[in-house]
Length: 56
Image 1 (cartoon, rainbow, N blue to C red):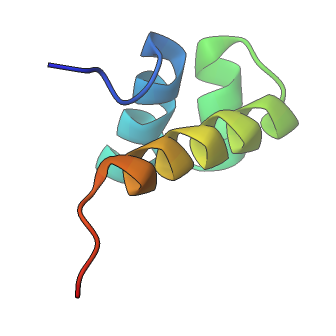
Image 2 (image 1 turned 135 degrees about the horizontal axis):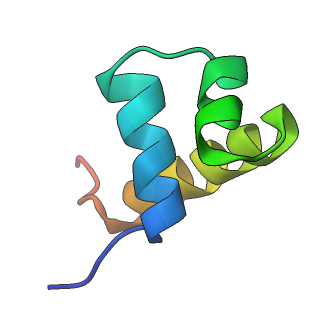
């Protein structure tokens, strides 16, 4: 099974979407800047979108 995102991207998705944390709180928790959190989230969601089947 192919992993759709890096461990950092998975952590960001869990914290942001699973727990509903803010960008700022997530950044503080993982030791990153808010901009890095936004980028990790964007890349993880993009990777996930690319792996989902398209509706026809």
